[in-house]
Image (spheres, rainbow, N blue to C red):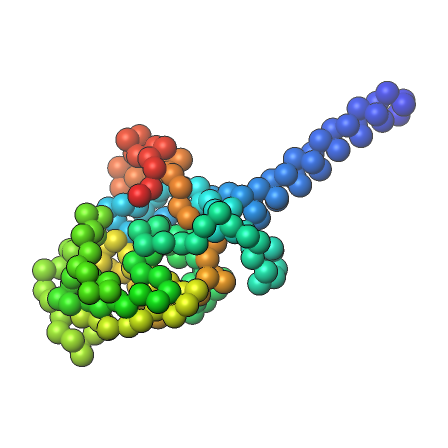
Length: 204
């Protein structure tokens, strides 16, 4: 192999290595792709939506550690957040933040109340008109509960079909991965066709 050929091969290898390092850096500290696997966030997010998650905003975690770097701001009510499922951290969940540390939350006959204020939630849907009484389960009547510091109460927008903080408790900041940003692809498996109207939709 000539010197020129070896130099060209070396340049390609170096370029590939730098691309790999950059990809790992971006995925670990800045942005990550996520796919919606369930209907718990319907109609905001549908099964088959692919989205990007901003890991930088809340402060990225150093991989394989519990150390979180400083972020731009803390999570707040209304943010749609991707996080590790508290009961099985190997799984990623996505829900909406409904209350943060220090706030008191209660669900009364499907109506969410935070610090005594009834929330107006245009994103929430109820697919089951039945109201389950307190003591039967936590779906329609829950609390009151004061959220501990540095934790959040998470709920799916599809309120009658969501495994969320009503069942497994509040979410610790340590498990947060980032805020959902926008949908970059959406696939309707029933129609076997892309949902073109959802592409590049900002997630609110």
